[in-house]
Image (cartoon, rainbow over all chains, first blue to last red; front, side, top):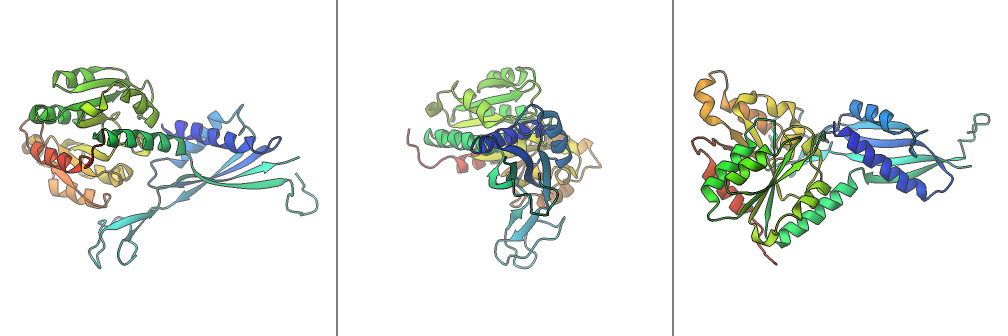
Length: 113
Length: 232
């Protein structure tokens, strides 16, 4: 359940951002979580509910955008079909992960008075 | 919040952040990595399920190499120092790192543990992570390479079930191969096939701590990954 420590880090960075806008209230967090990041989105959402009380995120909704894993050939850019061997069938070149390892805070929304 | 005129909630301000949530851990990990490289230490993050044979891998490595190389280890463990004691008995400079209920090590824990070692005197530092195929893959510790120990008894499709761990591995040690004669339903080629579907540069050493299979191959691999320049 490392999702708890991920939420702790998330709230810490939101706090840092919120300090730059005194008096503003954090209303929404948008995060991207990759399929191969090792973070489970359901566990992350429940960990957030446990931890957000009495923090700068107490009134903020967490919006999680899941990002699918995509592997593509380093030579021809061809996408590797899901479940296939991680090697380009066309040019026998290595493949690289082009998306799917994100654990990223994209945006926060603040309510200013 | 304005709900009357469709003005677009003028009092809601979006702030773009686009920052890795674990950025702080990553920067501590980079700090560890630079210290280790400067001291000429090859740091290995050794991961795997509970019982995959991580401690036995280190014992077998030390049996063959402890005269030629100075080997140290940080043994992550939820509650005991059993592994650290086994490693010390094998001639490894070992420190136990109890994580309590934490399922993984992080860069800050490793940073504090590094202070117990005289790094310039060490050639190889293994971080034996907490036995777990999920959480340890998420945290960069400052290692140069990731090795995953996977035992032949764990099931042919284990890599497909834990793709994140294997996607990050530089080397997989397929351990306990001496048990294969007793496991008629385990097909090693199926395990290799599963690894090739989740590991972009598949690199597997078949390994047995009991009969020594693969230990020399592992040592060659480690030698090849040692930092080239030593500034210490």
